[in-house]
Length: 116
Image 1 (cartoon, rainbow, N blue to C red):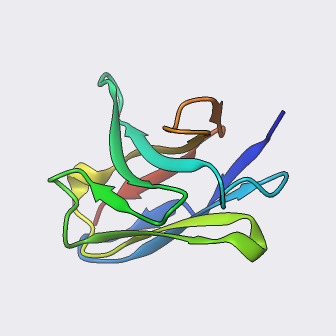
Image 2 (image 1 turned 135 degrees about the vertical axis):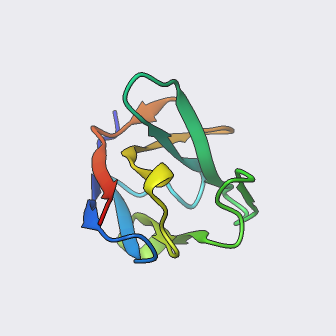
């Protein structure tokens, strides 16, 4: 079993930045795919970004050019750098990992609120 713990959420003004972290309880990110997802109130959970074990990345169109996913295998941590935040980015952000695609293990989520 693997535990994933997200951190770094909070309240930020529009145009601001946050960096989310997803820490794993053991070393998996060098062999697992990881994804960041988000869920706003009353909406479905949507994929934001993914990074494969080979460090290939993909982004939702809504965050391309603003968000960056990265991985530090030595720290068992995946990051989501979020810049130029907009009110519509407000959501609970979750990380997930899986051996081929994300989805096997999930974190508890971290709240991101973008508001003036």
